[in-house]
Image (cartoon, rainbow, N blue to C red; front, top):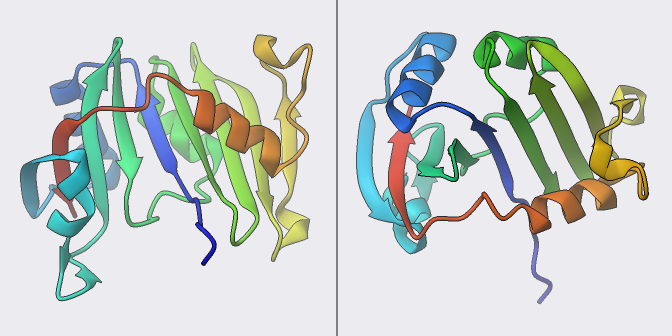
Length: 168
């Protein structure tokens, strides 16, 4: 059996409370459940009878960033312009990939400017975007989903044993 990887997250330079409030304002809704949990129980706490209870994110604060790990896939393929509304004047990184669907995205916003906008989805090749470049790409630019997967897998900020699951 092959292991399928599809980690996806967004992180913003705000305190956790401020980031959650901003997310709720941006989504124009409040979570119907807020569950303090461990990483190992995050998915099971967002599910009931094998189904998602709703859109779910696992949230925690790490190294000055609030990280929202997208558990249920509801934040895939949102335009960089829409993400700018969420970011405001704060730094934001949106990143993820799925090696079964061959898809990936990387959006980096700093100082209200879209610095990087990469999107690849093999089932919709016409939606491919590859705009901007980050300093870390000078030696090895991201050109496909594998480059995004490497970025995601190497992101040390994205990990916490304990956090909060928000179910919308």
